[in-house]
Structure formats: structure tokens, C-alpha cells
Length: 380
Image 1 (tube, rainbow, N blue to C red):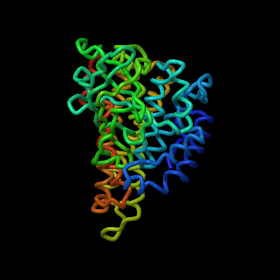
Image 2: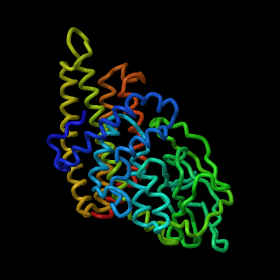
Image 3: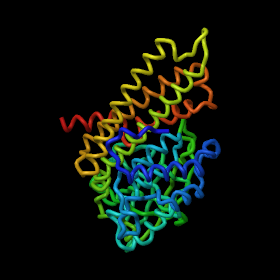
Image 4: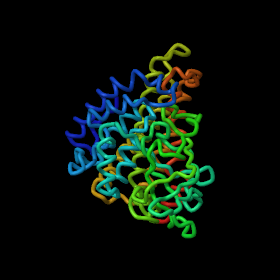
């Protein structure tokens, strides 16, 4: 269980919410983690359970039917989900897509989608990455060509979180191909729209419980009113959400790193070798001491970043630095903790194996560590 007594980012309301999160996860997630991994998807029943408990999109304003809570409540859920060892796509909906709907959506779009996003009846995805375009949005080839009062979308996307479950997808497409990244728009495509097809649920190294998919668009015809935000302003809208997205990944990294450490402490104190526990060896104690110091620094920095974000002060460079440091530290943590497990660490029956697999992509999605360094350098 995550130790939160000395945290500075949260108040009593956040901690009461944490207790709710833990109870719901204990009933609807923890007993089914292995099944989620095997099936490659978290069932809609889990989404509904979180919705009923007020755990989906808690930051939505009361005006739009939500609880009107701050982003700290999202962070509580993200920490607990990562510590649990699940890759469920709840955080994508809570921390990323819902902001697009509330901030950019028309009254009609908000009314159509937000209530279901809160209840768990509507699952969302955002489709940016393509087979030939990742961090560089100028390389996007998916087009949305105007045809009267409609747009006709053609192209493909890949590595899309919630791709199998999604009821609606925010598609990043070129509406002005000659304008580069500045000619992109965000367009809503509902599941079941003719020409929209899901590909396979991708076979990944880790995060097996997250449905991650290919999506295909062949002459998908949607009304122009499906544009989310301003036409040809998709790139700007995406950039506006980057600090929170990258902070969310940093939060997840700390939850996963702490769980890996706790598993290593537990294992080394129980495992016997050469007449004593593995924990008693100087190498083990020194390794764990070093990792413990990094966790102490990590949690302090994370609380600083969360507090700055809640005040609206966290810059893109600061969020990128947080994503860079925390995910790199997470990888160091899980790898060292797996090593302390010895041969057992290579067995899938031990939680450390899943934590190790799931951590690897953290340094890639949301912007690779190399891209993060580039972004941070711009604020120096």
C-alpha cells in the first residue's frame, strides 16, 4: 500500500477519495488482473464500477454534470492504479481526453459525450500516432477533406490506447494539408460510423491489459460539426494539453516504481541464501538504500509538480522534465528490483515481472525521453 502520510500535494478530501479508489480496485480490479492481462482488455463492467463510484472524470465541472474536483483527485487514482500494477486506460480518459471535450466541445458535443464519460458508458480514445508519424505531427497523413457540410476521413492510426473499447475517437487529421502541423484538426468519430474499422489488439511487450489498437478510416463521412475545437487548430489544442499529459505519466511512473521497490524489499527479506536472508547482504542493503533515496526525492518532486499544476503554473518544460526524470528513474527502479529477485524475477508469477514489462513504454509514449530532452532544452 502506498505510504501517503508525509505527502504535501494532498488534503483530507484527496485521502478520503484514495480510500474509495482502493476499495473499488480491491473489488473490481485486483482479483481480475491476471484475466485482464490474458484477455488484453479491461471489461466495460470495470469502467461502470469506477463511474458509479465517482472515479471517472472527477474534474468535470458541476455545470457539465461532474464533481468539479481538482486534478489532484486524478493523481490519486493514477498513483493507485500504477501501484496496483494495472495498465487500464482509465487515466487516458481522466487526464487527457475529457479535457478536450470540456474545454473545446460545443454544447451539443458536451451533452452527447460527457455524461457517459463520467458514468463509464462512454469510453474514449485519441488517435494521433500513425505507422509513419509519431512525435512529429507534421508527418501525419490521415486527411479530412471537406465535402459540403461533411468531412471525408481517410488514413490509419496505430498504438491507440482504448482502441478496442472506444465508443468515440478524437482523430487528428489534416484539414489543410499544405499548412503542415498547423493544418490539423481534431475530429470526433463514433464507433459504428461506416468506413471506420478497428484492427487487431496489438501484441505488446507489456501493458497487456491495455487494449492498444490499429484504427482504419476509409471514406469515413462525418458532419463538420464533429470538429472538436477550431478547424485547423488541432496542433495548438494538442500542445495545450501536453503539460498535464506528461505530468500524468510521471505520476504513474512513481506509483509503479514504489510498488517495484516494495516487492523487492518483501522478497529479499523472505528469501534465504547462504544461511541468511538476501536482505542481509551488504549489496542488497546498499542497493535498496540508494533506491529508497531516489524514491524520497521522486515523491517530493512529484508533489512540487502537482502543486504547480494545480495553481496553473507548471510549464511545458517542467512537465517534460518530470516525465523524463520519473520514467527514467522508474526503469532504473524496476530493473534493479527485478535483479534483486534473482531467477524469480524472470517468472511471470511474480509481480515484479509485470512491473518491469509495463515500465518500458513509459520512456516512449507521451514523447520519448529524447524528445523530452529537446523540449526541456528550449527553456534553458
